[in-house]
Length: 228
Image: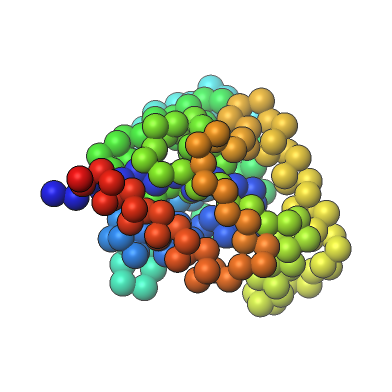
């Protein structure tokens, strides 16, 4: 019987983690665990409950009663929080603003890491984030670290926002990407760090399909190795 792996994908904002995590999970019929959606879910509930994002005790209590599930459909993925589908609600600009503050709370990070480990412990999962291979699953079977230049990641974000009808400036978007990188790497709790045993893929000049094929090849080799 082939072993189902725990696959960790880390990297800075805009490197393609979310897109590739979904695609890789679909390729191997694994569950994609969107850790960013988990923090967004906490932010949404905090916002609804009028909880100050700096109130660690209130956020800790909120997380203690939290249920998050991911369901993969034929065309899209659903995020189910406390029994309700919040897939669209957690993607609003308002929730995005709250998420960065909520995610900086140590109690929230500890609660989310616990949930992520419970979801992924049995294998057959792909998790993406900034500390999956270093904090959440340092013993993951396969670890990827995706990179791309700040200019390219800023361009991707710029195009994405323009497609949604937003009025944005390319240079400003690149500056914001660089600022996000600095915040992720310098934060106190679980900063963005590349695991020593991670496979690094720079996607600056690669298509999504190019990167996906490289990742899939690594996963197939690992499955074969563990099945021998």
